[in-house]
Image (cartoon, rainbow, N blue to C red; front, side, top):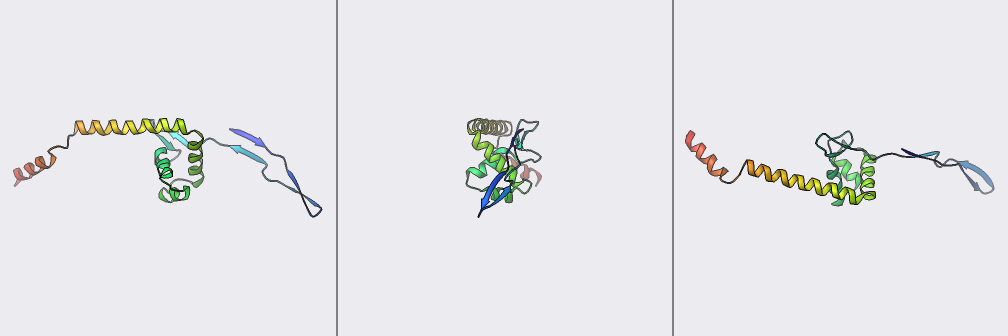
Length: 131
């Protein structure tokens, strides 16, 4: 955690000097992201995946709209995730590309293990066998 201490600012309004505390302490916190047991990055404390938030953002959704769609997410966390993405875009894009490839690979494996070609014919034949 990074912490910055800021001094108090003095402001003069029509000859009167007023001391005003803009911020006493500014603290940078890490983004609310966590990897789960399957190595998927999620918004910490939720089941919402990083790519879900970023896809919505990239499609033009505002953080407020994303919060409406995913009420489990805190608005500040959505802003933090988007900020992290914008500050680390090349690294996040590599992760997102890896996730897309994992999805393609999983879909291919499912199609090979459970071919859908001829499913309708097999179901109709099964139904005819029972009749």
